[in-house]
Image 1 (cartoon, rainbow, N blue to C red):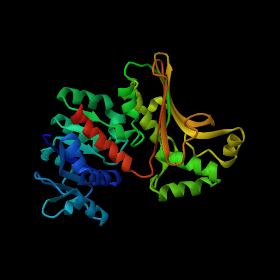
Image 2: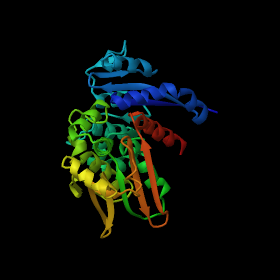
Image 3: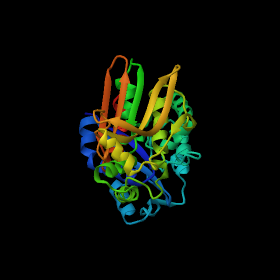
Length: 345
């Protein structure tokens, strides 16, 4: 099999970015033998600056730097202290931008700027960053189409769960009557620990933070906005429904206490934070709220480390998909999946 060399630039070398680099090394032989792909990292950027090399960087050396508490800018001989992410995209002669910088819902930066610059330069973009998609989805899609390149983001909605792929590809020709999902792992972990083990909210949250499921500031998760972001992305990319965060009715889990959980259990139900899109007047009504589910509901059975989606359709029946995601590796694997699909389709 002929082997095609693909040059990559990575923005963001946090938990997801580092695991993607692990996959580059771990799956090197598989990618070459099964798909005929040689993936070469030619640039990487974090808050310290960047590292750039036309001949390629060693993914494992980048990982070791991060594990030692250092930035990519100290990469021997090839580090560029202070180089910005957009500047790296401009200078790296890459085929694909991998965008894994932290989500910024104010202006989407630096991810949005990097993605726009990459698309303008004719680079494919693979992202797990929700911010640019929520703020500028239509603009990014138009730019990708104009330049004849791909914008892929399956890892931006429920990590490794192929939520977007199912909706876009596997339900082709179907009308989605409504969808509902547990799209945020932090809140599902907290509610499950509270309901099944009787733990108070503060203890369950602390556990989620210790396990790396929740940020030091968990407000985006527990107030429902992370799930709302993902629902907006699904609305635009799968449902064809132009939506913004302002269109989503959002209620988080901070008001859910032990008594309400006990009442639900006594009636054979559970409480989960459900993101939902329902057909309404030619469009969709979008909401995120704690919801009482019958024990027979497919999302009611999800454990603390699971997320899930249910698509209700006119011709494809009802399709449910779930994932157990105990760490960010499946999200990094979604980036690899998107990258492979770009060159295999």
